Length: 132
Image 1 (cartoon, rainbow, N blue to C red):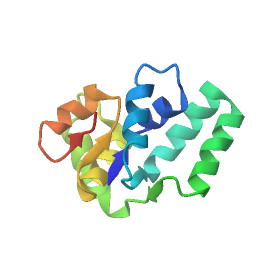
Image 2: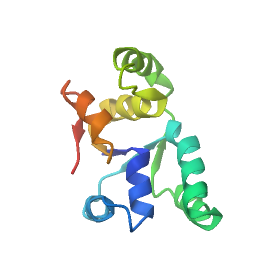
Image 3: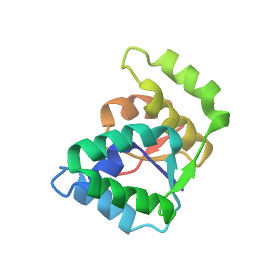
Image 4: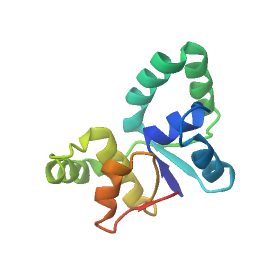
């Protein structure tokens, strides 16, 4: 299983994004379940529509409906999310990144992201591994 951060989804959608080929290679080269934490959806919907327009947003929603990603609600993760936000408030880590980390910890620890600044610090704890 691999947990995707919002930045990985954006990189997949934007072939001009510097990490596009890298993220595409990971996704295309793996039959792993692609987990998308529900906490990312608001952020993703906003960024995708603003950056790429409603047609790309419709395509992303179509992928969600087709279960290209396994949507993970992560209700049981909120205690860990709180711990992460408090511990890394100086980054600041934030709700979405903390939810991605908590979800990944529960699902094998592998995270696909292009946000190495935030996730790299947390990966130092040894509970998650960044996929590259």
